[in-house]
Length: 346
Ligand SMILES: NC(=O)c1ccc[n+]([C@@H]2O[C@H](COP(=O)([O-])OP(=O)(O)OC[C@H]3O[C@@H](n4cnc5c(N)ncnc54)[C@H](O)[C@@H]3O)[C@@H](O)[C@H]2O)c1
Image 1 (tube, rainbow, N blue to C red):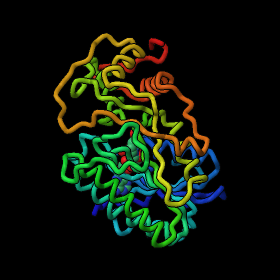
Image 2 (cartoon, rainbow, N blue to C red):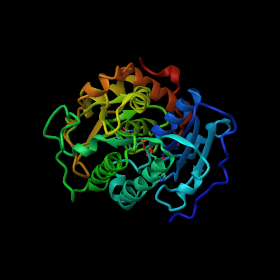
Image 3 (cartoon, rainbow, N blue to C red):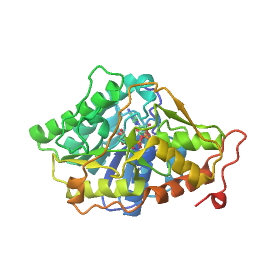
Image 4 (cartoon, rainbow, N blue to C red):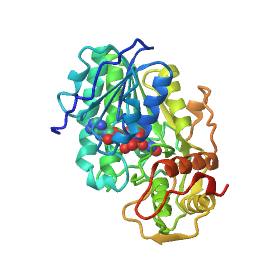
């Protein structure tokens, strides 16, 4: 197990708040945004992360907050539950998982350990505390879908020994664990299958398509599209996703599964062209053969989350402008100066 089980920076949140909430994977892209929102809403927030794909910089500005506590640890480490011995947790948002398609081969064991041993530990802890759990699953549980859009009832088309299996099957196993705790122990547990989400605090080294394109723009390199660029995706701005997570935690019934994602299909080539237009970038797109098995399209059927009153508020163009501006303010790389916010094309 990782020896960097660092509790030095932890403290007990110092003031009373709305209740104690645990966010696993709190230093990641979504975790960081969720922690900030929960703090703004008045919760006492405990975050854990082992930084395998998350970043210290993401949570550093939160450390001074009187209702925030951070512990560096691996949720698959047997010492993880001890961190919460005296904490009356009311809710757990279980986000921890290594992410990124190129990481599937690199971090395959860590993905499977986190999704199995780690999820077991999180569920046991929640059961002991009587806390509600929301697990962030993924559209990858549908594999290479033969049905479009994908409703939550769709059981998917997954290859259990394919190249993407550590992530796809890891998420499916975590879902099975959660639903078993719901059925067997009466745990209050919900599942959100997230489709591509983007926005501030995505790591500039993240391997997902938008950060990759922004990295190429910063480095003045061509945008690399793997495959012929006709594969479609939908994208959701992070604030809309966080609203959905809070809504499901509050209004979702135990055992329910929700898809959350954008609903407007865009090809990867169209996305590259939109980012080129928004940044005024001069270089074009380079096509390369895909390095792994890719999914041709993914689109969520979001009727269930819509029935709770959720409607996304941020358009792709507006969200991209915000993300580009955020990265311009916070990231610089090599010889390339960050693009000044004011010089961006509309
Ligand atoms: N962002 C998306 O578009 C998207 C899509 C589908 C699913 N999800 C899911 O949402 C969750 C958050 O994703 P994200 O985009 O913020 O990715 P991320 O990689 O930025 O965040 C995941 C965090 O979990 C941490 N982590 C991983 N294994 C851990 C372990 N064993 N112990 C402690 N911490 C660990 C990582 O260091 C990282 O900070 C993940 O479970 C991911 O699978 C995200």
